[in-house]
Image (cartoon, rainbow, N blue to C red):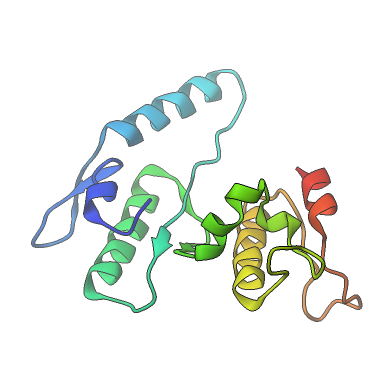
Length: 155
């Protein structure tokens, strides 16, 4: 979700003064219904909410969203994944049919520059939070980073 109460309102309504959750919204009700349906068939539903398109500086509104989202997560049972920042790299690669999993030193038009590598780390953190890949820890005895083929095969 974008870092705004316009997006937040889709999953929960808050009192504008106290920031207390007043009720869950239509999307949350839909997900909760799907979760109940799956539970009747012995299946689970992992609901993960991401804050995306975050700008650089922290703001009062961002903090209010963070507090409200943490409160709502406890109320309706979703987990909060790592945020995705607003990055040019996400848009730059699209015309070439590439994703950040394709980033490497030999990649053209401009290779694996620092902004693309930072964006790739962000995406890797998301994939790890979702349990789709396991990344080596900094204290692990290897310096290997998964390449695009390894990331794709792990999905």
